[in-house]
Length: 278
Image 1 (cartoon, rainbow, N blue to C red):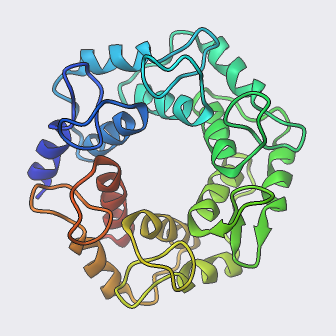
Image 2: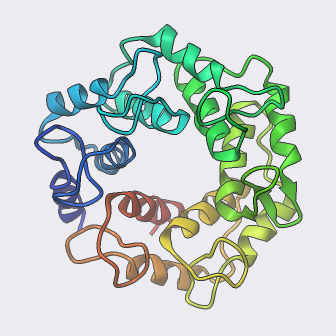
């Protein structure tokens, strides 16, 4: 199965060097880093390494940030994080490191969180992207305690919210842990672990909240929380069955059992397997 997964992931690379979410899909930054991460799990690299490097570099804008594609003139914290991770997997750093760092810092808000673009409101996803980006560049937020305080402001009895007016779910809770870890405050408390456990369904997978349908994305987030807490899912064997059911004959993983393979879900599926130590 490992060979099939490698070959399928490689087939997602396009002639321009980037990766699409499936073979023949257009290249984007988020799918490119997912493709590289899948291959890296098996100590493999894309067939066209040079082309991939050039494609990623072509997505960097003058402000130092990155867009989703080379034609995207606006930089975003999430795609900047994806680009830095892609370059890291390729053994490189961005060409404009100081500008890149400047772009990330320009997205920091007074509440301690980070926005997707300068001047926009803070949210959990963008804060996780910005903090992770700074970490890859050997930096931390100027005031880590402010980021910790911002994350704390989004805590609810049901995990963490996306923003002050958003809803809580298991994915944002996993992102919150990433931020807290980078800022030196990453402790998984019992309540958060119990929340993640409560999101497991009868099919063994996890939903975004209790009693919501399972998919591989939320299963990955829940298992990440439980793994950091040193806790197993309540229905461990059923969880294994759900993850394996998302695996397709072509070597990729789908969002749910029976759905077509996508590179982002393949990344989640492989990490679920790693967390479960199958």
